Image (cartoon, rainbow, N blue to C red; front, side, top):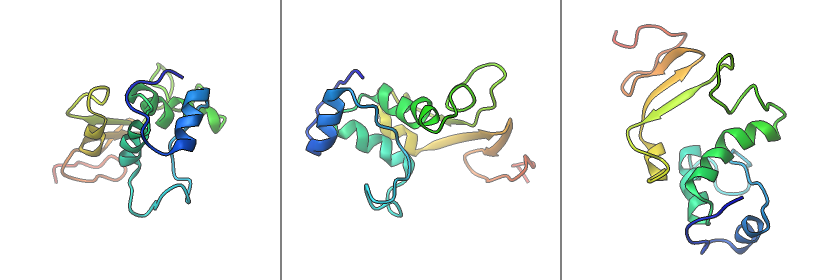
Length: 127
């Protein structure tokens, strides 16, 4: 794992990053107060501990899918692989906190959130 930025955070996390341990994001119920911190905020927490923005994105997608035994079927955007996509206005590689301002969510090929309305089962979000 390649690191950039400051690893001024929690020493055990810093030690794992330095040793090349692959850390994935997700609700681990105990690592932090999960009812208060959203998963979008977890990306910023990880970069604050020294993980690069690119590795934080991998930790929440590709590496998490691999850990769950879903390699090639989740955590990637490839032809023939179903994907849920979150669109943000900024570039998370430059500002990881932009993941906290979601503009669009596509789930199962249908718009689930258009930035203003939550849609279930792909219903029209403008109604």
